[in-house]
Length: 110
Image (cartoon, rainbow, N blue to C red; front, side, top):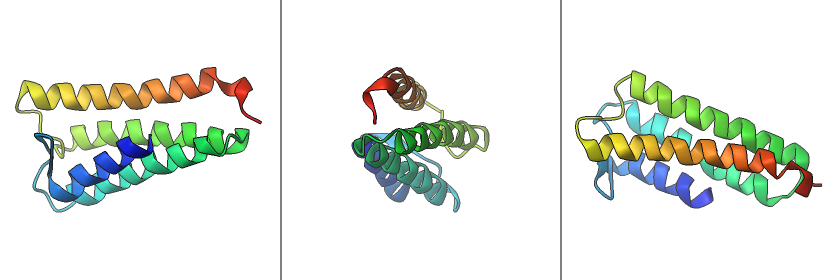
């Protein structure tokens, strides 16, 4: 999750990452970097193995998913190619999968 967060922030700050692009809008880099930061912090929280921190991580992942959807609705994510659509859908699905997986592993945390 930390790696995905850094990749998300990198995409936001450079407007381009492995061929995936975001809008050249003034707010897009800040919104994308914020989402990436939340993603990375969620990964750090899970590494604590504490239930209260893991609950916070799941909450942050929900914010990541909501933020990605909000950026899409606001037109900050470009969906002009199939590659863009697959990257956005896949990235959001991965964040959702992390949240569900962590929730299913709840008993492993202290």
